[in-house]
Picture 1 (cartoon, rainbow, N blue to C red):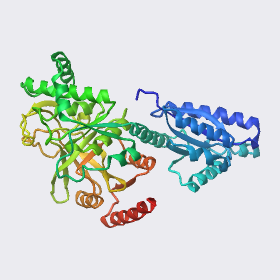
Picture 2: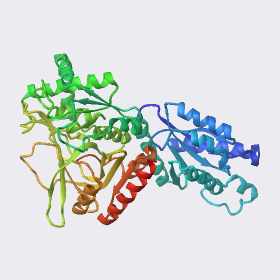
Picture 3: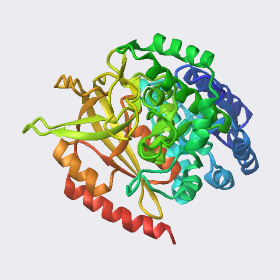
Picture 4: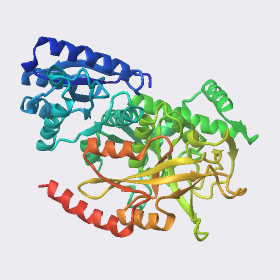
Length: 490
């Protein structure tokens, strides 16, 4: 992560304990922020030890106006009366994490006296601070534990990644090259609601404009793009003209996205007028660079792919557009096979992908070049964002990506196999009851907790299918969610 995004560390206290205590709190807070920053995805910048309503409110407004501030982490080293936090927290428009910790790990048997107790009363202060968050019904992340523990840093770092996803989402632009596939329901959605809730601007650009841009791409530009392909991938074809056409498509799409400030796009095999091939390799290589994609016009999955790729920066594992295609229903070992016509991101590839050219079978165009590979095994999640009419719902399912159990020599596409939680058959029932789409974002880098925190920040409904899920409990949860979210509309 190379930009200047950061998080603010704000420590609560008051004037009751005198200037010496406040000096100690200030020194410790700066030390803690510096130490943690060296171990977190982004800097945790100590801003102030706040003691008054006006000071807190001014700082929170400053956080709102600073484009590099992605969230505020608060901690109460001493007792910090929470009525003076009301105006500031009410004004805060950035993600908020309440970090319940303390400077000292242990209670010092010989040193503890009333002076020590006055200085080190985070257990007192954080409960007061927690009350006002609950009383104001504010979305927040609560993390508890010692600030030097690896598990605490991992949890705080995960929340930071969720907040970075929020920050990225607020300015995300998605280019639609054409519309969504005809007669398909789940790829539809309310773009105005998505911009209100998520910040996305979803714009249409005619395929004819893309074709005009493709026609203006030069041979020199294509030569340079071909060199990048050779650096990244093996060639399993001698049909260089077809590969060069994919390079032309990619260069044109990148130019339009760069001009529009967009980081995600869609296309549709039913809308390729003037194009010789469906972009396969072109889309895959763009996704390898962090650009989101959605097939068949699915702009919601395109947006979530881009966001989750942003959240995953610097982590091991892949994050990619995916689709459940078919099942292996061997009793007791049921498996899902995921792929797409062409567009699976190589970030999950177990080995170096190879470029091949094969017939597609749909779209009525020339055989396109595409990357062929198998997915790398490991724990992961699949995520689906759907429009429920009046609200958005995110469905998260825990999965285990496995090495493909079959060679499938006649299936020339990138493919991934996984076992969904709690098992395939129960998981399918849960997914269908929740309305999950056939398009997902699969990630072995982003965790379910990160996505749960993202939904909390965004204030959208979230359903998590885990090893402990049952159909009966999930149906009950969906019923209660419907009631709760309908009540929130009034």
